[in-house]
Length: 410
Ligand code: PLP
Image (cartoon, rainbow, N blue to C red; front, top):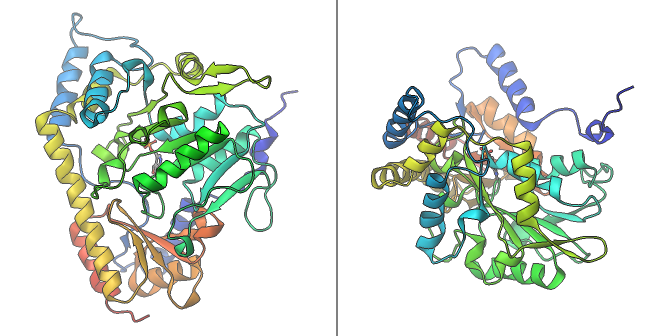
């Protein structure tokens, strides 16, 4: 008899985006002529940069010739990509990250989900709330979450509320915490931490031997100087933090799949008896055992994001999304909405008007303006009363959505 991992049975059945899709489909069926604008799901819409496409074509040709063909590559990534990452994302910022601290992968979703493989089940996990749901669900699957309570929280997870009351800056936990997930710029709130605010967390982790899992999937959207691009800009962070970066939002690789994770060699975990163990060694063991590398073709495409042309083109696309985001943000502000994020991020976090719940506001926008957002409560209990909009649409749709928003008064 094959026993299952019963933790999976604890996960609530439906997924936020399938609920949204169902509601939108029902609305479409009832109103076939409605011109629905989707400002909800966090996927990109612009094609890959020309420099990336050129690199892909060339890499395909490499695969057609026995002298340049590649089979299995190093699981951690080819040197050409790893060294390019180290030079451009770290050395260029004066940060000392070594090639063997970088692990190329097929995505930050996989990496933030899989990192738990090398971490004990007795760790107390803290998450900011609202949060990217993968951090919570993968801890439920592993058995670290306890039970789901009627208030929508898991009994063994420590929630760090991020709301307008604390300006979306999580307070340090009052109970003992071993692992903290931080995502900045944040999905879903679009807010950031300054260097000083992030330092508070690094100092906390150093003092408490805690581990920070720092997801910087939206690093490329940072526009302000005092917002750190990497957690390693904070002194001591190499002793306490793993950093996740992705080409998905940076360069439109959501369907192409490439990311990387930095696990510094100075970073230690502990056995129950208090013995130090290198997390870099553990992650290397896990990665080389359970993963067989990102395709050569895709790694060449990722490398091309860093060429002179590639950088220019990738930045132009980011600027396009940031411009959309600004149009939405300014439009909402001029309508009197309370709006957060959207300056260093493609995400705008809107406070629902008139005490509406997240889903009530979602339904209202869909029915009255044919605009699809993402209900904030889908990202955690503290997301109730908010809705997420994104700048990932087209400029035309964004402008049209804002002109529709002008029709409502709050
Ligand atoms: N981390 C955050 C915070 C995200 O919002 C997303 C995607 O939406 C990811 C990770 C997933 O990244 P990837 O496409 O590299 O798996």
